[in-house]
Length: 111
Image (cartoon, rainbow, N blue to C red; front, side, top):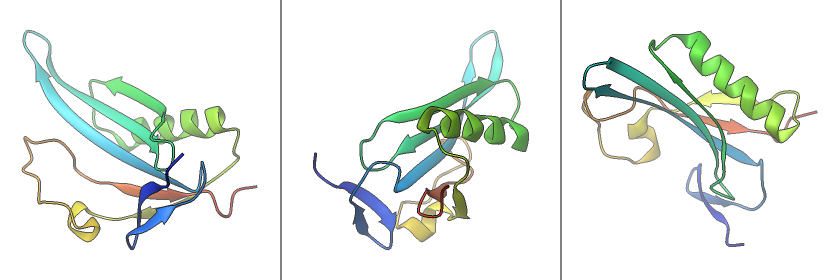
Protein backbone atom coordinates (compact mmCIF):
# COMPACT_ATOMS: atom_id res chain seq x y z
CA UNK A 1 0.00 0.00 0.00
CA UNK A 2 1.33 3.46 -0.89
CA UNK A 3 1.90 5.92 1.95
CA UNK A 4 -0.98 8.23 2.81
CA UNK A 5 -0.74 11.90 1.88
CA UNK A 6 -0.14 12.95 5.50
CA UNK A 7 -1.04 16.18 7.22
CA UNK A 8 2.05 16.52 9.41
CA UNK A 9 3.97 19.15 7.52
CA UNK A 10 3.44 17.31 4.24
CA UNK A 11 5.22 14.16 5.43
CA UNK A 12 3.49 10.98 4.19
CA UNK A 13 2.19 8.53 6.73
CA UNK A 14 3.89 5.12 6.83
CA UNK A 15 1.44 2.92 8.75
CA UNK A 16 -2.18 2.47 9.76
CA UNK A 17 -3.29 4.52 12.79
CA UNK A 18 -0.30 6.85 12.55
CA UNK A 19 -2.53 9.78 11.64
CA UNK A 20 -6.29 10.19 11.53
CA UNK A 21 -8.19 13.04 9.93
CA UNK A 22 -11.57 14.34 11.03
CA UNK A 23 -14.18 16.32 9.21
CA UNK A 24 -17.44 17.92 10.30
CA UNK A 25 -19.66 18.47 7.27
CA UNK A 26 -23.11 19.94 7.22
CA UNK A 27 -25.82 19.94 4.59
CA UNK A 28 -29.54 20.62 4.24
CA UNK A 29 -31.93 17.81 3.44
CA UNK A 30 -35.15 18.99 1.81
CA UNK A 31 -38.08 18.58 4.20
CA UNK A 32 -35.84 17.56 7.14
CA UNK A 33 -33.57 20.54 7.73
CA UNK A 34 -29.86 20.76 8.53
CA UNK A 35 -27.86 17.62 9.39
CA UNK A 36 -24.24 17.26 10.42
CA UNK A 37 -21.85 14.44 9.54
CA UNK A 38 -18.74 13.94 11.66
CA UNK A 39 -16.21 11.35 10.50
CA UNK A 40 -12.77 9.96 11.26
CA UNK A 41 -10.55 8.72 8.42
CA UNK A 42 -7.23 6.87 8.66
CA UNK A 43 -4.73 8.86 6.59
CA UNK A 44 -2.63 5.86 5.49
CA UNK A 45 -5.34 3.39 4.47
CA UNK A 46 -8.00 6.05 3.66
CA UNK A 47 -10.39 3.78 5.63
CA UNK A 48 -13.36 5.42 7.33
CA UNK A 49 -13.01 4.40 10.98
CA UNK A 50 -16.25 6.00 12.18
CA UNK A 51 -18.99 8.40 11.20
CA UNK A 52 -22.08 9.83 12.82
CA UNK A 53 -25.02 11.77 11.35
CA UNK A 54 -26.71 14.11 13.83
CA UNK A 55 -29.26 16.94 13.86
CA UNK A 56 -26.90 19.06 16.00
CA UNK A 57 -23.32 20.30 15.76
CA UNK A 58 -22.36 19.80 19.40
CA UNK A 59 -18.86 18.99 20.66
CA UNK A 60 -20.31 15.80 22.16
CA UNK A 61 -21.21 14.61 18.65
CA UNK A 62 -17.55 14.83 17.59
CA UNK A 63 -16.43 13.21 20.85
CA UNK A 64 -18.80 10.27 20.30
CA UNK A 65 -17.49 9.82 16.75
CA UNK A 66 -13.91 9.80 18.04
CA UNK A 67 -14.86 7.23 20.70
CA UNK A 68 -16.36 5.00 17.98
CA UNK A 69 -13.10 5.27 16.00
CA UNK A 70 -11.00 4.44 19.08
CA UNK A 71 -13.11 1.35 19.75
CA UNK A 72 -12.89 0.20 16.13
CA UNK A 73 -9.09 0.71 16.07
CA UNK A 74 -8.77 -0.91 19.52
CA UNK A 75 -6.89 2.09 20.92
CA UNK A 76 -7.29 3.64 24.34
CA UNK A 77 -6.41 7.20 23.37
CA UNK A 78 -4.94 9.46 20.71
CA UNK A 79 -3.27 12.86 20.81
CA UNK A 80 -5.51 15.52 19.25
CA UNK A 81 -4.06 18.55 17.49
CA UNK A 82 -6.45 21.03 15.90
CA UNK A 83 -5.39 22.51 12.59
CA UNK A 84 -7.68 24.84 10.66
CA UNK A 85 -7.95 24.13 6.90
CA UNK A 86 -5.65 27.06 6.03
CA UNK A 87 -2.87 25.53 8.18
CA UNK A 88 -3.10 22.37 6.08
CA UNK A 89 -2.65 24.31 2.84
CA UNK A 90 -6.26 23.80 1.79
CA UNK A 91 -8.47 26.37 0.17
CA UNK A 92 -10.60 28.48 2.46
CA UNK A 93 -14.09 27.06 2.80
CA UNK A 94 -17.28 29.04 2.95
CA UNK A 95 -19.69 28.15 5.78
CA UNK A 96 -22.12 26.57 3.32
CA UNK A 97 -19.32 24.50 1.75
CA UNK A 98 -18.61 21.88 4.36
CA UNK A 99 -16.31 21.96 7.34
CA UNK A 100 -15.80 24.05 10.45
CA UNK A 101 -12.60 22.41 11.68
CA UNK A 102 -10.18 19.59 11.00
CA UNK A 103 -8.12 17.75 13.56
CA UNK A 104 -4.97 15.73 13.06
CA UNK A 105 -5.10 12.72 15.34
CA UNK A 106 -1.94 10.81 16.02
CA UNK A 107 -1.74 7.43 17.71
CA UNK A 108 2.01 7.66 18.29
CA UNK A 109 1.41 7.99 22.05
CA UNK A 110 -1.44 5.49 22.15
CA UNK A 111 -1.35 2.76 24.76
